[in-house]
Length: 114
Image 1 (cartoon, rainbow, N blue to C red):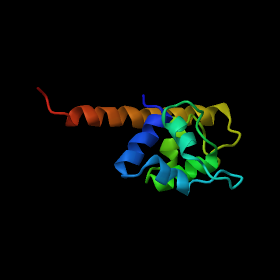
Image 2: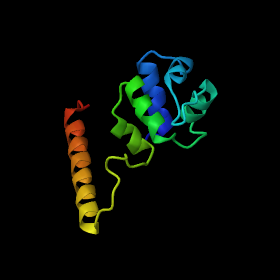
Image 3: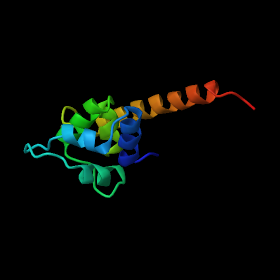
Image 4: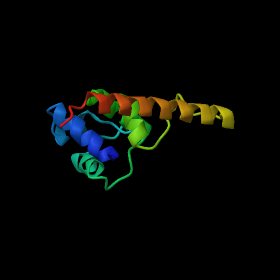
């Protein structure tokens, strides 16, 4: 499985942006700028994934779904975070596993055979 850093590195390169260009657009929750060395550390997984505000901005800048970044950050987005009973949690994970399994089946069907 990819890491958070690998996902943002791939997306940044796909968008044709430098670390400096991305960092210039990012602000922390307290308004401070995000510096290019910090972004470099994120991309190389030398830091934990950033605060939610930065994740949301990265998603917009890199044209990714914030949900994808939250997944790789191993974090639950604020709009989903709430107390849930065990049955709700189990149902959510079952649904998630079903979607992932179906996507895997679709991918294996579409690969050419040798």
